[in-house]
Image (cartoon, rainbow, N blue to C red):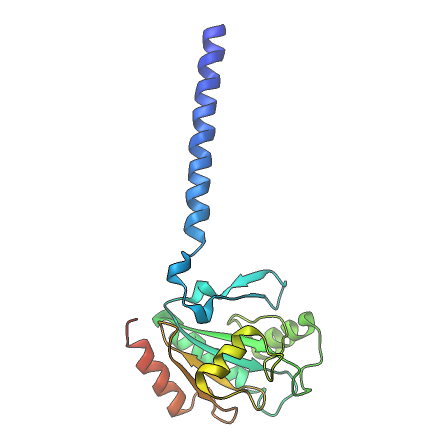
Length: 196
């Protein structure tokens, strides 16, 4: 009886060690290696829907379109075009990232109100982040860096920054450039066809 118990303990211990190693491997696989994340994307922001911290490193290797958004703006209907872009090109490697901001006094709601508006009014499914500052010296670190690299800060809502797959080249598009304009779509397609 003692021999059976001893063997059962050894089997259980081996199983726990094996399980622990498997969990460790799974956790390591879920975390991107720091070297694989471009400095531009090496930031974490709370998600709009539940404010859970999200690493932008998960978008490394993709073409990224970053947009500052607002619910009560003359350009708010651009959500439709952004969603269509995301649907059309995400399988090829495009991701659209929305950053609501009240910098221009047109996004006064809470994160929950913004999330509900985006979902119910425009069916937004591309990643959105919690409301933050995107203009001026108090801008969040991503927007500070985007402004530095492109030489342009957002002057209004729905300013767009297009980032190449390597995270090293940024092109700026003002608010009046619609998501489905030839100039923006052409730039996206060119970057999608280029490997990092």
